[in-house]
Length: 180
Ligand SMILES: CC(C)(COP(=O)(O)OP(=O)(O)OC[C@H]1O[C@@H](n2cnc3c(N)ncnc32)[C@H](O)[C@@H]1OP(=O)(O)O)[C@@H](O)C(=O)NCCC(=O)NCCS
Image 1: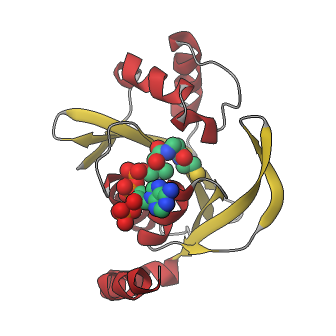
Image 2: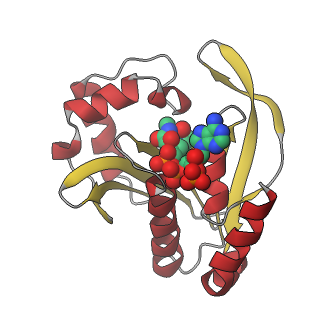
């Protein structure tokens, strides 16, 4: 798998179907339907913002998902969001690991990478944990998705944890899988 720069060519029908479909309801768009034009305007905003980066995730020549990061300079941390629509087992996790490595290696002043998953978004929570994130807390009724309130589960990894994960990742994962 490979992370490439996301360009306007990556706004395909497959991407629009994913973002407007069941998978996309966990993202920021809410109930809004995304047209190609809306997606292009949004992408322009992302690409012109020096604190945001967006990657297209490829398996070989096939574009299977996206991952976006937003740097918060003041708090020296970074948020992210992912959408996978053709992923096979483990690929969302692998994309996240690649993004975490890229961010910590590139932005040496970033100490924390963090996101908030909906409590019902099991694929997100599991893949975050498998990528080395920890659950940081619990935010009751934080999110409104598909017409209902859901709890928010903040997840994240600090630079120190990532450094340890580099050495001990598979060991930690084995322990975690035994307990899950
Ligand atoms: C979240 C998302 C990026 C994960 O990508 P993915 O390719 O499915 O991730 P992975 O296959 O690496 O990991 C998902 C894990 O969750 C597990 N899982 C999924 N649904 C599950 C369920 N209901 N119960 C238990 N485990 C579940 C999978 O089995 C897999 O674990 P495994 O590898 O041990 O089998 C993808 O589902 C997606 O794009 N969702 C819509 C957008 C979204 O939710 N983005 C995140 C917002 S916080």
